[in-house]
Image 1 (cartoon, rainbow, N blue to C red):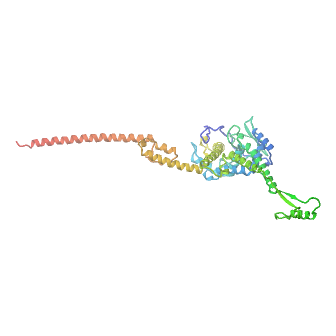
Image 2 (cartoon, rainbow, N blue to C red):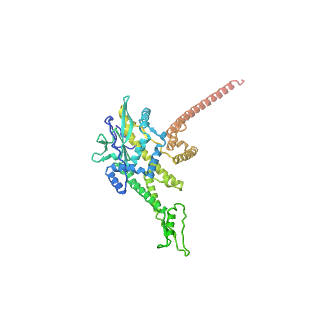
Image 3 (tube, rainbow, N blue to C red):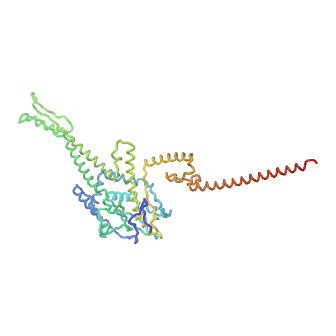
Length: 471
């Protein structure tokens, strides 16, 4: 069987080769384990366990971090940039794919890989570095077809380094060993021998706690300084006792009225109020701290912070950051496409199509182009047309491979004899040269024959005149 290639044409290892039919049995999730509350010590413990292949606490933490509006927004923006325009999804044919295979896969794809399923897979893969889902198969009319994809909570997964496999905790079937190539499971990773080390939870966990505490402390600061302390000046001793009672009564009922009586005697001795407010700039540290964390979160998930932080800037900077965002999005599309094709689509082909080969599996693909790329493409087409016009009017026009020129700029060509390769042009020139040579030879022969005919006619005319002379 030929090796499976990823979306860039590289060998994909390990190659899944299902040796058994799908297993139809009841396997239930364990009882949901709530994310709970977190502090720095718990987060660091969970991350340490995560790096050792124990994902119970880091899986719970991955559910907790989406409480943060910033993390949730960045994750949602990343997923939506891929899935928001589902009509742009296509199945790209591989080298030996047939139209029938693509049509058959398209029938069950829309029902199985819904936006909610794909969003869950993307979230888990970005946060944890991997995503494991159960593939539910159904036999209908003699064919095995996937009917449901069930993402498995990462909190119920551990890694067995000795056996090089994932172990899933279930509610009714004990622990299940899951390996690459098992048609009952879909394992999506970001690559590498230990894909969980690429999970963003390793850095987002602490950012989540920092932002939570920063908001709490900032709110307390605002509460304290939003109601400044009031300093009271009053006569000492029992002097003006009745006035004191009236003064404090007016303070307690002041509320938002803002008016209070401050009685004084003729010597100016009496009551007074002073508003004691903070004069330092300590409050600015809350905003600076939050901004730095926000930038780190956006860069971690999307590779840039242009969409969330930029207020002014150059168009060149916008293009560069948008290109980085597009590369992150395309990387997500690649690991989605490669893993789903090599596991689910390939397994479906093995089960249903005799003589199936891995190269026959079509590629799932999503359109990840953006407005900048379309503008750049239009500019490239304009410059390519100007270059083509220049070359067509130059002495090099017969030496240019116009088909290769069009392929270089992704210009689709009709079957026009004008746009031929260099070899085709040479063959046409040789045929034309041969035809021209034959015509030249024929023309020369005709001219020689004509001259002989004329000379013969002149000779006969001369003989005729000689016989007509008188004796």
